[in-house]
Length: 119
Image (cartoon, rainbow, N blue to C red; front, side):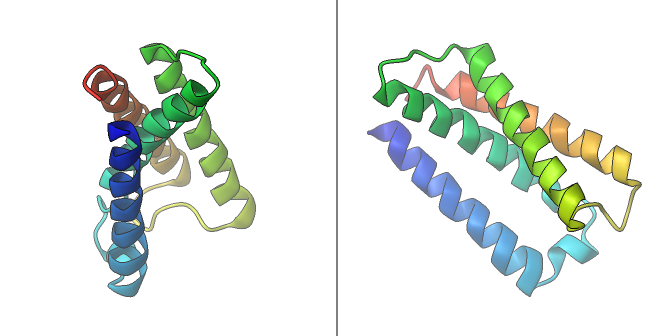
């Protein structure tokens, strides 16, 4: 139950940071590092949510699997951004931004994998 509560709080935090501050206040377009905490929180959320989801079916997720899940969802998200032309950064080239985003997703997944032992 604590893992589910943590997921809900992280999800709401991501939504507020992304939609309100990112778009409404235009931080995504004026602060070059604004998407870094979003990707870290996203990787954290995917690691926790994936572990919780698979746990519903009695499947135990190991820490490296949680990290790989966060990376996989990050790759899917970057592909989505590329195909629909909504990604990239005004401050760096697209390949550098993508590599940075995937690193942040993995970092968040690693934090999530560490937290799994405590939740």
